Length: 305
Image (cartoon, rainbow, N blue to C red):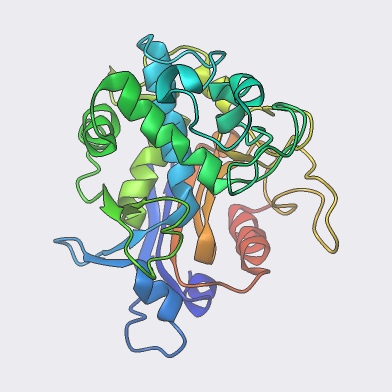
């Protein structure tokens, strides 16, 4: 926890066996060099815990919502995106666009660039593309007839007790406003509740929130061959990433291989490790690049490994 505090964290929660093992918060409001953090700061909970727009961690929340929609028969992963959004949602040709299925948005294999222009045939290239991903919100809203806020509240945050979590608009200068019109704002503790839902295979206590047997196994398994470290809007630790200069072969070499993660800018993290019955969340400002590996080294030393 001391290491996390020195790495500009504002909140860290560690849950082991369904119980809080450690929890700590830090105030960065008076520190210099925290401009990026302040842009994403969304105030505090009634308990005084920071609420933050957790950037691309939202993608994994959306993955869960899409899984619920599939279980309800509202979304077909193999259907073209245009079935829900209509033709012309991208800048690809009509024939090219028709080959982009819902599954391709979830696996980052749409073949589009950030301008939604055609770059490769769907399913043949992997590209981390937030603009293409953001179409899933529109798709969910079209398929359900409800806005993303209502969908999330009914399907996840209310039943899981995530009382400080909501979608918040991103205005000018609010991070990735041009690529995702809303951010998912939450606390470290609420985010840990979502991690527990994932750890318990879509359940909160006795209630099955997902009601889609087998979806989570699909979501946290390699979704395509180009980047096996990526599932359906989740990052996977047990598979090699595409080769990058000076980058480790795995997401977190010091952590267990069955770890899967939701990751966002400025080092926002949700880690889920089924083999250890462990959930960890970290929010805050930009951390040193080696912080995640150092954190896991210390954590497993504390466990006696």
